[in-house]
Every structure is written in C-alpha cells, then in structure tokens.
Image 1 (cartoon, rainbow, N blue to C red):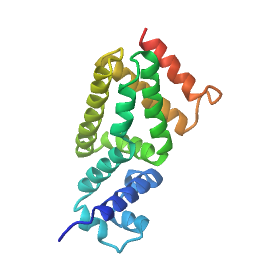
Image 2 (tube, rainbow, N blue to C red):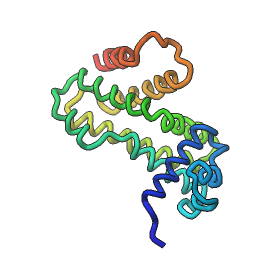
Image 3 (tube, one colour):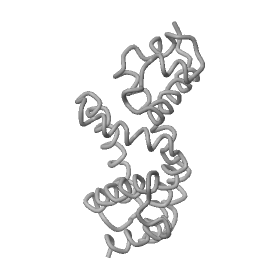
Image 4 (cartoon, helix red, strand yellow):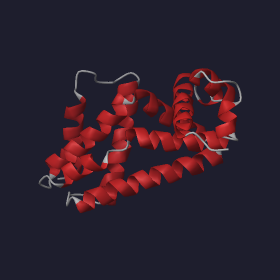
Length: 188
C-alpha cells in the first residue's frame, strides 16, 4: 500500500500537538487520530509503534524548525563576525518561539528521554545532527567560536526558550538583548 506523505505529515503534526498539550503520557495513537480528525487506527497504520510515532514526529519537528537552504546561503554571504552570529542565534530563537508547540513538544521529549532509553536514543541522534549542522555552518561562514562555544549557545538557548515559554524571570529584558549579551560574553 502506498503511503500518503501529506497524511503522514498531518499525523506527525497532530502528534506534536498532543505531546505539547497533554505531555508524553497523553501521546497515544488514538489521541493522535482524534487530534488529526482521522478514523481510529490511522496513526497506527502509518506509525506501527509508539517509538515509530516518536521518530516520525521528530522528523517532522526537524522539517518545521530547520532553516531553509536559502536562509543559510543568505547568512553565509554576509560578513563574518559576532553580529552575524547573533543574527543566526536570533533566527534560531525566532523559529523555536514561533513554533511554540514544537518547542514544548521537544521539552516534553527531553523529559521523557530521562525515563525511556529508546526515546533518548532518537532524541540524541536528532540533537547531534542539529549540533553538527550548527558547527558546520559556523565554520563555513567563518564565524568566531568552535564546537565548545556552539555547545554553550545550545545550553543557553534551551534555557532561554524554557524561560520565555513558561514564566520568564525577567520579562522586561527583550530576547534580542539576552542574545546580544550571550554573544558578547561567549565570543570575546
């Protein structure tokens, strides 16, 4: 039976919504079917197990929040330096903030990965690919900082997003100001 890619995306998007709204315990095939408005059993036809469902929603998260090739080419053509790096970070934070549901789902998966090694394995692979992409972009664009600095920015951005999506400790300070301070502090 041929698989319908549009239906697969619909189901993965529904899984993201369920995960963000109900947490990991609420993520079931039946809940995904209900959220997607499809007949019961549809999600399990596309994703045979819960692990396959998680892998499918991780792939969809990547599609939804990854920069386009055009975005990367535009940034790579700009003069290298801390200003470009700050712009790159702002774009990452903007994409993750605009896709609030996706980011919350990612945080839910991070927590679930502490209890389920199979989720940790899928998440780790996805995170390492994103990290490698950021390091490669940084290197290709001639930006300051190497893998250590990129890792520190990942840690900082995860904390910044968790703060901004929940109860900010300093809502008066703009996200751009926070990013500028991070860049200044880490890329001296």
